[in-house]
Length: 96
Image (cartoon, rainbow, N blue to C red; front, side, top):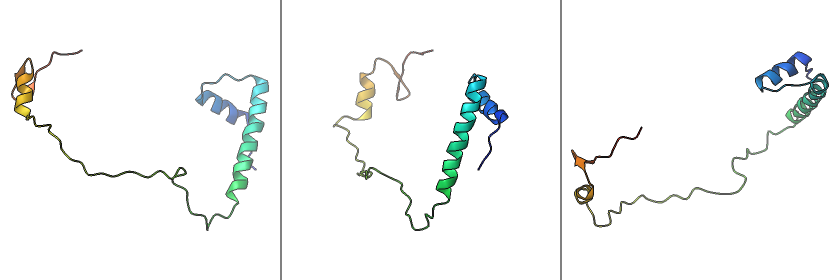
């Protein structure tokens, strides 16, 4: 079983920007040791015949072909509708 020291807990608290009291440090140390012990138990399971689970909701990607629909309007007609254009592009005010 993995042993967690007070220094380990204080280091984790500092990385997490947590302020812990002395009683909280001891409780958290015990909790972390229990969690790591449980994970060690799980790592002892034989999963050699178990297929990895990648998707649990059975959703699938829906693929479709991309089609271009120009709605009967060409680019030049749209640019002509703009209040101001330059070099085939719509000119807009600066936004800072």
